[in-house]
Amino acid sequence: MRHNKKFNHLGRTASHRASMLANMAISLIMHKRITTTVAKAKALKKYVEPLITKAKEDSTNSRRVVFSYLQNKDAIKALFGEVAQAVGDRPGGYTRIIKLGTRQGDAAQICFIELVDFDPDMAKTTEKKKATRRSRKSTKAETPAQEAAETAEAVAEEAPAAEAEAPKAE
Picture 1 (tube, one colour):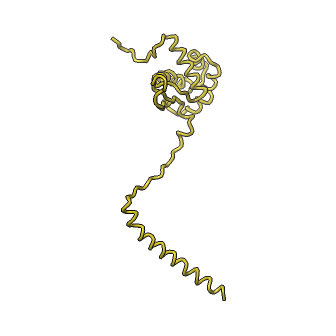
Picture 2 (picture 1 turned 90 degrees about the vertical axis):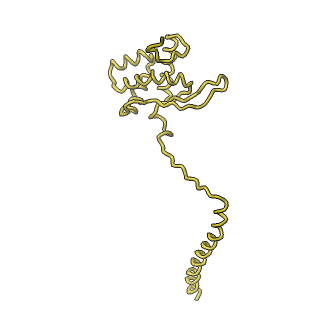
Picture 3 (picture 1 turned 180 degrees about the vertical axis):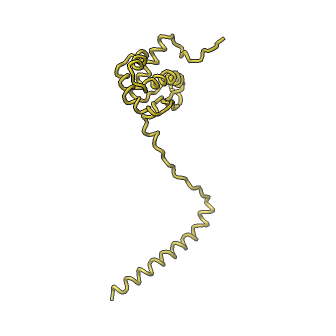
């Protein structure tokens, strides 16, 4: 029975899995976005989010705990510096997984995993123009009426312009 065996072993030994997740976490912290398989991204999310939570409290002990997982001074500086500053008020959910499709060679599901507060394109809200849909019948029926209204407006605009020009000619 598999009681309390929830995490994905990813087909690797424990030491290989730990070093792979540490390397992926370092790459994610340094580059803010990496491309990987969905299974590895989900495992990485469970691995890196507690580290980011630990980095919100900048103390010697928390630095030592995070360093025991990552073993990279540059990643620790980036994590406790810019990453912790950006996610300081966020209560959790520091990463986002965006699925991209399947890989050509082995049909594995591929995705982005990125730090949420570092993607400027996702923060922007773009308003899409609402496309109007008209049938051909309604456009043909409205065309003569619209032309008549436009010509009436054009005649009304030209008449005061002609009267204004007439006194100037005298």
